[in-house]
Length: 144
Picture 1 (cartoon, rainbow, N blue to C red):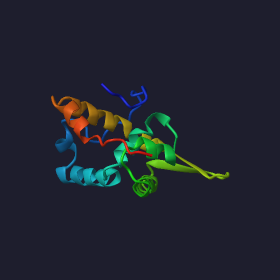
Picture 2 (cartoon, rainbow, N blue to C red):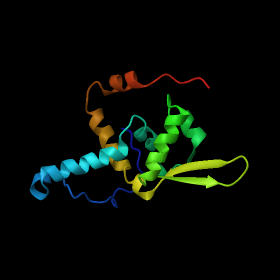
Picture 3 (tube, rainbow, N blue to C red):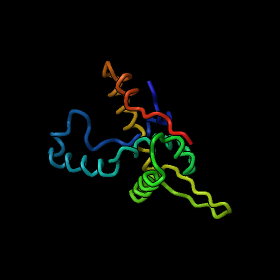
Picture 4 (spheres, helix red, strand yellow):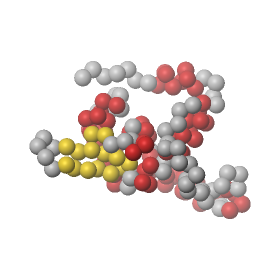
């Protein structure tokens, strides 16, 4: 099992939607609207992959992310990082030097997404053909 998060799970925030009790506490429409809002922050083919490479307090330069996120163009990477920054999930740091250096890290709020991605991976692992399905979507490495 792949775990992306730092080991400190006891301090994880509690959900206002405890499992099995959503309908009792909140109307279904409220939860659906909240899910739509969340998905708007994370939609797109690349955002979760970018986040994966920043979890655990990792700091990555743009060029490093470009190498790590196989198949993404520079334009798309820049666009996705700008959106994640605008949404408060990623922090961009510009180091004023020659040559210019820019790096990216998750904000505290962005790092809180890690348990959710862990849960998605656990959910996917329960599918018998997950490994086969996962290998079929991996793009071949781009040549530099």
